[in-house]
Image 1 (cartoon, rainbow, N blue to C red):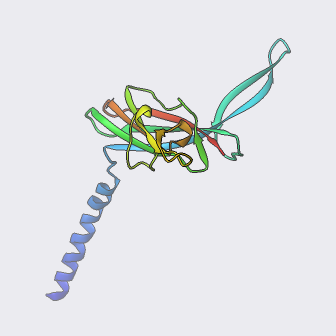
Image 2 (image 1 turned 45 degrees about the horizontal axis):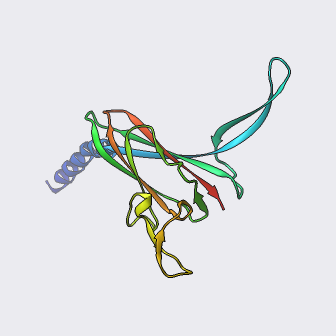
Image 3 (image 1 turned 120 degrees about the vertical axis):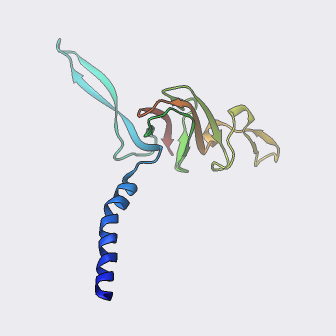
Length: 170
């Protein structure tokens, strides 16, 4: 009888495995993927024989100091209902300097910045830091931002939107 019971438990475990696997594959309500790009300049010959300079963004592979990198986050709503006030945060690598005014959103979003590694976010005119030379507080410059936060007003069901920013390798 004991032997049969062990088989029964094994059978229940085997039957429950597909359900566990299916549950583990259920995507979260919101997923975010990040891609980085660098701008390349190419000279091409036009149909009339003239040389034209063309710039385009390609996946960043090998970035050297002075290169501007564009980071694009694709925010996906994996549900069948609209989501509102979706917050996305991006740290800015310490080897990069934020390019002023480059944070954008494909849809309506509030964009805030941080100078304390993402602990607090605010609008640029309220970001205060202590000046090391004078000891007084002053408004932070964009090159001192070290994180960006987007709060997207709405992401429709089963769709995606993008947010992006640019930063220059020091």
